[in-house]
Amino acid sequence: MSKPQSKLLIICGPTAIGKTQLALSLAQDSAVSIITIDSRHVYQELPVLAGWDLSPGVSRYSSSLTFQELSVPFYQKDNLRFWGFGFLNGKNIFSAGDFIDLINQIIKLETAENRKIILVGGTGFYLHSLLYPTQLSSFSSDRSFQSHLLEMTVPELQELLNSKNPLRFSQLNSSDLMNRRRLARAIELAELGEIGHPGPLVSPFKFQLIGLRPLDLTVYRQRIEERVVERLKNGAIKEVVSLYKNYSDTSLPIFTTIGVQLIHQFSQNQIDKETLITLWTTKEYQYAKRQLTWFKKEPSLIWYDQIKSPINLI
Image (cartoon, rainbow, N blue to C red; front, side, top):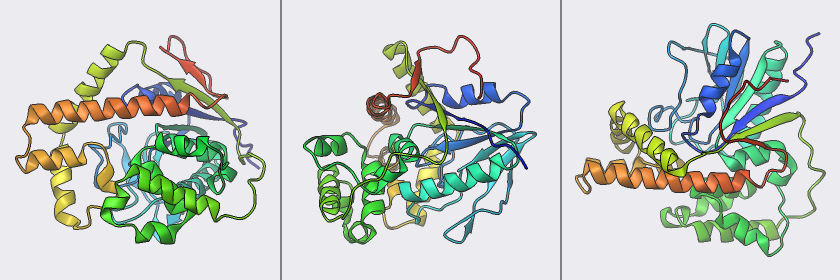
């Protein structure tokens, strides 16, 4: 019988900080599976804009796992595998609860093969739900709850409401789906309607958490802008044009991906390219600061300003 990895490594932090690069450097020649913790990587339409950052030369393979009757693929080159990328189309809703269920299946499948696992990503609510799965269905109803909700992004609020009250989520109109305060209020009402109390905060797996954070904010913002320009050159505009062509319902969560609406405005000649780059960079930078605020609340996370020496997988 195979012996599972004693601890699973999680590398988290804000966008464009080097999480995937670190994971790849740690993988080396071992049999390693990298699982994304990113709510936008699941969609097949936005590999460039959402920054899949897979290794060059990977091939797509089918697996035994399914989600909503769809096959969940993995990407592999040599001993390196990537999970959680491009198995849904834009019309699908993928909640934090769905994420936990799928991640648990992937981890069990890969640990059974004695593969080392590294989870990489920046979606704070997904990470929190992974570490504290029982809190997905119950939150403390104190005064800090509203403040906690308003620190979340619109996509994170949508995912939380959908996990708590799918019916209410389906009833929201396009305006409500994009309104942070209305989403937060709907979640509060769903919370008040719940019965019972959360159980112990226990995950079925043990994790070792490390976080990457910028050492120089000016240099970091410049790096974000470079990635924005790079994604525009590599096909992000084409992806967004196709997205609007293929889906008439712009209230779908995929349309809230940072950069989508700005690129659409550019494609409609509402803004020029320089404005697009500036506004997209600003939104990514603002999101990065919210990510850092979220991750700082995790007490077990060990921060690195710069990676000066290898971090051992446990």
